[in-house]
Length: 353
Image 1 (tube, rainbow, N blue to C red):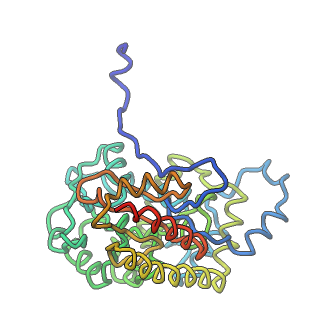
Image 2 (image 1 turned 180 degrees about the horizontal axis):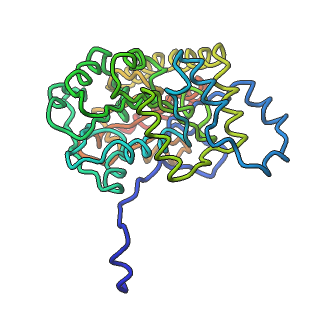
């Protein structure tokens, strides 16, 4: 490598979940919603005037931000919209974590937290989860440059109580505390209720899971007007036009259809609880997931073996070859029919034990 190579920012990139090109598969590996987006989304797609794509989009995504603010009962100045929650979180890392003190987040969680920290040269400490895969609140009562708590966590689906989240906020008034709530709609309370009390709280959510829009990339953050103002300053310094015209309208239509949203979430939660019974019947143990997936392990057959056997049958789940979780499978909740096919395949595979 020539001398210019010394100036390259070398990073180990995040590896996203596998996206098979095959059509006739059961895809339970990346926590996508098995049901279609809200009917209003289809209406937007049918009626959208392509000639409008000649023009730049609204840099503030005003209509979408307004719809989010209205749905959650917060002010317009308390909402930030971005290209998926990944983009929003990365922007938040860049904006709020600039001290020499390390930021804190769990050791078993989204693998892009440490990737962003490395990318932005942010010192960090990964706090070990307890044996039951829960966060130890006391571990976050130490000097830090910021805190990130996924709730529910991934890949384990464990949700912490609102009291636990508030305890972290109470003891860290000088740090921005980010609560990553990608899966919050499937079974736990949002930290949004704490926004009026804590100016340093940023709550991040997404349209990808509960609103069936992983393919459109819409995420958002809610916090104090001051935090949102700083986020916008960073965004406009990086890319003013982060969301396109069509996506803004799709997001608005989705956010405004609350009854459809609740109906689909309830369907997934019902299937999840039924799936837990089926997994238990087959000899799996699992954590009490409050997300749209189950983190399961089998005592008599290694997770890696089950993963490979399912893949041969064109059923895709997620396997993590990492310490402490290398004998678990993360299984996304699909439709009832997809899950029935999964369990039929598992029964056949487990007969080899």
